[in-house]
Image (cartoon, rainbow, N blue to C red; front, side, top):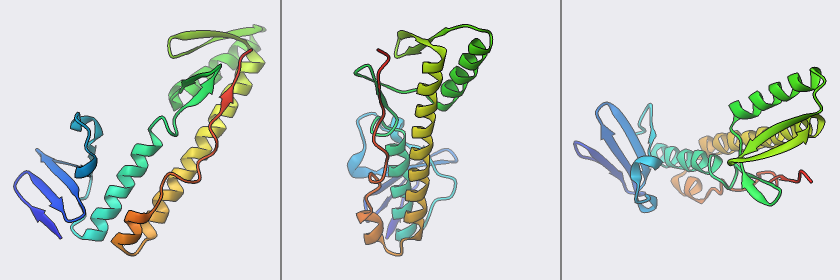
Length: 174
């Protein structure tokens, strides 16, 4: 059952929904961090039934996990780093351009640290990273589809969205 007030909505499953202006945000109440705004996500259509609310909360958990360091990271020379999609694509393009211009090396930056690599090595590394990111995307999309197909609140709450992700990359430049 979902209880409505002017600014807040709580479901019996602990889903916290906050209305700010015309936007609606939600998160499980028992998992809110001290900085709540960081974890809120806008919802286009707010489900009004328990199953829909449970699915929306689980999809939010899947998205949060997908963008966390548990998925979005790899090890480079012993340090945990990540590159977003735009940066990966940009680095791949620029490295290929450098290689085509007969340059032998390129410099990549990860977490404020530079790495000078042979262009071919950088391309292999960026390709491996892009393939890892694609595999993770596919697992996340499958988890969302699986949750949408579930038929009860109990099934949704029991669903483990942390399984099936590929092993993190462990890359070395030396």
